[in-house]
Amino acid sequence: METDKLFDEYYEKSLMQGGTGCCPGCGGPMFWRMALETLGPNTILYGDGPCAYCAIRNIKLPTFGLHFSFIADGSTGIVAALAAKGRADITVVSSGGDGATGDISFGKVSAAAERNENMIQICIDNEAYMNTGIQKSGLTPYGAWTTTTPLGKEAPKKSIPMIIAQHAVPYVATVSVAYPRDLKAKIKKAMGIKGFKYIHTVMPCPTGWRFNPAKSVEVVRLGVQTWAWPLWEVENGVLKLTLKPKQKPIEEYLKAQGRFRQLSEDQINFVQSEIDTRRKRLLENEGKNIVI
Ligand code: SF4
Image 1: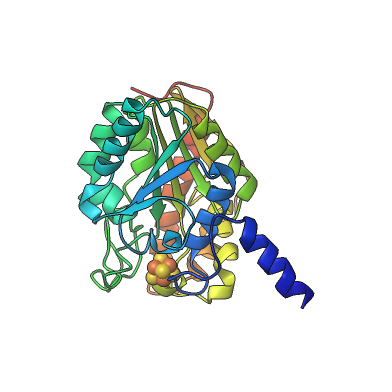
Image 2 (image 1 turned 135 degrees about the horizontal axis):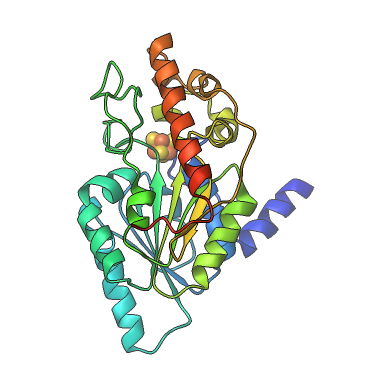
C-alpha cells in the first residue's frame, strides 16, 4: 500500500504517466523520464514514430508525432512560430530514431544545424529500424545481426554526432541512460544555449539486441565502459570527454547481446582494434577545437 502511494505521488508530479507502448526493458522510457525531469513543463516535443517516440505518447506536454522523413522540419516551424509570438521561455525538442536522424531525415537535420535553429535535436539510437522489423540502419554497428544483415553488418556505424559537430553548432553531446547525472547535466547545459544543440543517446533495445530485458542498464553501461559508446561533448567546437572509464574488453559488451553471437574471434579482435584507435584519437584531441 505504501508503495502504491509512492507511485501515485511520483506520477502526480512526473511529466510522464505510468506505462508506455514500449517493450519491457526498453531504454526509450528511461531516457525520456530523465530528460523530462530536466526539461520541465515549458517544453514542446516533436518527433518521429515508434520506437523513439513510443515512450512519450503518454506525457503531459504538447507533442507532435510525424513520419521519419520530417525530422527537424516541423520543429523548425514550431521554433519560428514561437519566435513570432515572442515566446523565448519555451524549449523546443525535436527527436528521431537512428533511421530518421542518420538516414531518412539526415539532410533535414543537417539543414537545421546549418541554419543554427534554436532547438535541441535528440537522436534516440537503438541501432536499427526496430519498429518495422529490425532492419539495419546506417547506425547499426559493424558485425550486428539484423533481419537484413543475417550474417552481421559489414559496414561501420555512421558517427552522426561527430558529423553534426562539423556543422559548427554551439553544442553536441553523447549520453547514456546508464549515466543519468551526465545525461541530465548535458540536457541542462543545452537548455541554456541559444541555437542548434544536438544530443545523441544509444538506447538499449532488448528485443532487437537480443538480451534479457532486466539487463538493459548493465548492457549500455558496458557500452560506455568498453568505449564502444564514449561520453563526450563538443562546446563551441572544443572536445571534452565527460567520462574516462578504465577500459573493459569489448568482448564483454558483444557477448552480452545475441545480435553479435555470430562474430568470430578475428572479428572481435577487429572491433577491439577499431575502438582502441577511436579512443586514442578522442584522448589526443581532448581540449582542442575539432571543427575542421
Ligand atoms: S523494439 Fe526495442 S526500441 Fe522498440 S520499443 Fe521494443 S525495446 Fe524499445
